[in-house]
Image (cartoon, rainbow, N blue to C red; front, top):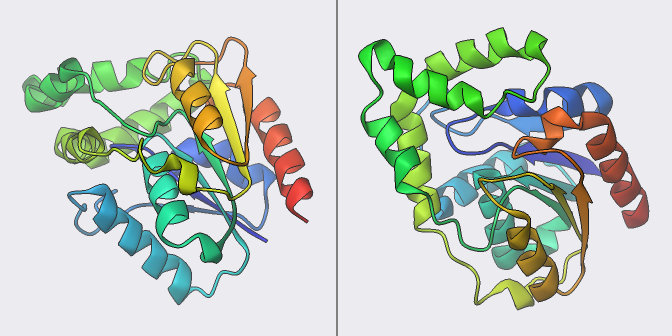
Length: 229
């Protein structure tokens, strides 16, 4: 089986640092525009790009794991091409991703040298080990607010609430109990409306659960992968 990770809006494969170290043969994709190439303007286009990436590398028995926007791409993949997947893992995402206007405004008015935007961006990582902060900050600067704005607008258009029941792939839902960006009710909704989903809420973790409580998250992913064999 091939474990493939998809990052969130205005983010990068770096958010899976602890998973890549643990799952040796896994792959975390940097979506186009993050930071090379041109970003896609909607989730559909990201989906087709990801599918092309996976097909070109002849990955087989793919388990797709998506965080936030990456979760939206994963859900759409499961709806359009379920036969190409073995199972899916969803973290801090939703069947509909309504983006708070404050996040959009922060990208549109980033401040001198993007300083206001960067300070806001880095707040999301305050519960992540401080030794990761310099490299996360550096990657954020490379990406910039325009890429995040592009992605957030794509997320804001995303809605598969009416289609969830069509997904019967084995699904592991992993969430931080203190996630304010995508609250636990998003996880509950996914679990209730998908045919084959199991939910694990990790106490004390926020939106970047895979970085904050990586040992627990890795353990849950391991259990899930074992259940698919």
